Length: 447
Ligand code: ADP
Ligand code: MG
Image 1: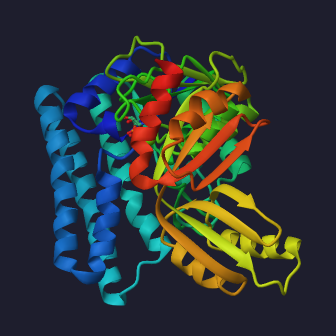
Image 2 (image 1 turned 135 degrees about the vertical axis):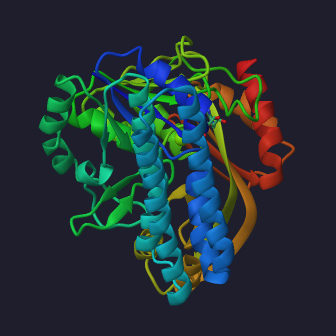
């Protein structure tokens, strides 16, 4: 049994829904996980933020989301015969979810506050819409789908916005899911969201549907997890910006995790965790070119070339904290990292001296608050508008100097970290230099 996950790009309109259905039909008893339709999650969050300042505009965003979903099902059912009651059900579902959204937007406007909890309840509406509607559409083409509410399966803690799944609880749902599948049903579940033990909706973080698919794969002991998207696998660099990037046939779980962590947004960084524990391979494949082999991520690691892939993040900051000398070195570092932990900030690059630490970090809502607190640990210097270039799977140290650093020699390198053990090199440069440098290094290494 395979888990098939389809992302937002695959869920964008009635035409791609049909393409997804054609792919599902190639499989015997799969389990399907879908994301929200393209742009919907972003629009939902925008509506929530807008409700604070202009509730009318927030309602306009909500009604646009409603209109787009009604359009998808209308076009789909124009081309596929089905009983009128099915279309009615779908319309009713869209109306109900939009009403819920509008109630939440009103609450934000009157309370003048968006809690993480409210944000999750709103953000999950995208998958609640897409998964139910898609299950109805697929069923109208003759496949026996069964909609599954992720709230019933993906139990998490209450860390809203970035909830941690309870893998034991999820595993306990496996027998009933398996029973469904044995009876010939194809479960269709929305990714990204779940529920905590108090019945509150949670989300697994941005792009969390990949993670949902992997959690289900591990719980059901799937033969493979297939992440279907709009490119033919994981490439040597983002193919949208580096046109000569090539798909990588094979990556280890660790390499894929690092690529995702350092900005390759084709995969949620936690996706590999449940799969690698059970040694279940993950495939990344293209809905527009389903016969292309794609990338296989497994415990196998192959060596070809000095570097596996290059990735990058923009919108980063270097924060340098210098000790006020009232604390010992180890206490100083522990204190600094404790503040970052408290604000849920993940460090990308770090270097230290005896009395200072420089950290390369992605900008986020919490960074300003963290910086304010860091001021109590010493003097803080900030370098804005930074970008982090990461090379993953470096297996030849000689080429680091000749092929890679030589390509950056005319650009200020503001922070560098390298680990031979993890085969990972990170270079922080000014943001506007990121793309030219990435293209240069990519050409040197891969062309
Ligand atoms: P989905 O909607 O299917 O989840 P995403 O937009 O999340 O799709 O991920 C696919 C996109 O990831 C691609 O269109 C590509 O531009 C981008 N991407 C970034 N880095 C890479 C990479 N190294 N390999 C492949 N795609 C990448
Ligand atoms: Mg994605």
